[in-house]
Length: 220
Image 1 (cartoon, rainbow, N blue to C red):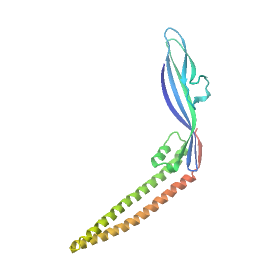
Image 2: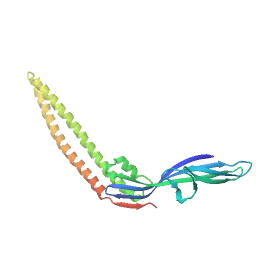
Image 3: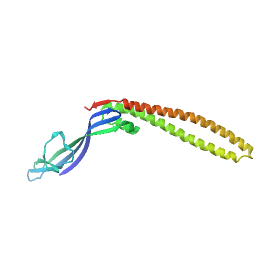
Image 4: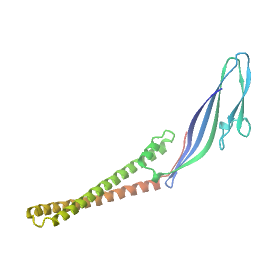
């Protein structure tokens, strides 16, 4: 007797409300048996397929049971190979908080063939908003790093200036550079403020879309 196992799952309903996606999922575990018959005559065999806690035979199929197994009788003609498939299934709910998902996870859900088209479209829209927010946050982080480096550079020049009291030319050039650095800091400050505003706007857009998204779809 040879056996191979094949897991699968089916989403029967997708619901989005209050920022949470709830999927009604049926998980299935199908075991394929191949039973070779004896050449000298027909045989009767009982396959004892293991039971699993929380799982039932698919489609309401009936079988004799023991505490640990389903007992499945099989008639095997002489010299033939009989195939038998046994499917166990269990229903469960999956809940996903959409606001917590990163862009790549939203994209993966939006491209998942197991979800209905309406759900994929809604998640695709959320993914675009999440990508926009991620890019805005990266812009803020990059500007903050640049500004921090500029502050350190200006502090270094200020320290050097104290040691240039007797070097008028170098002191003059350092003062010019410090003025230029101060101008760059002012520009960076304005850019950083604008970037933070843009990030906050992107954050609000995503949050409002998540809160306002309502969907309930049954799969065909």
